[in-house]
Image (cartoon, rainbow, N blue to C red):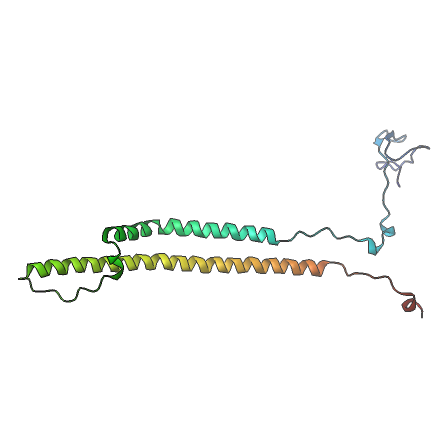
Length: 184
């Protein structure tokens, strides 16, 4: 315990108690005496590491945020494509999914066959457009899924690395030596 003035080092007056302020006789500064622990007296066994917080709640939150960001990014980038694809299906119905190739064009003299061929060709072109739009949506979804998976793996590896570093930095447990091991 130190009751002396920290400014000038003058001794405290007799009867000074820790926690009660007194005026230093040498320099006049107010002094609040306090107890100082002696560091050398602390035993190694008394070391208590601060509680380590697990990184997993933060990593889980980061993954949820990443997933929401990827889903929003996908929805934003594919909104017009999905709208066009849905409009094709609404216009042509389920026939746009299975429209066959129209084949060779009939002769120009047969007007009814030519009209039928033109309608079949339009439906087939709508099917190709529908498949192209679906392919774009699916490719972006696959790319964003791979991106999310890579980021999730990276976060998991960082969490494992953090846990390993905490285990390495923990002090070794010191068990008291037995009497037999102390004897020469």
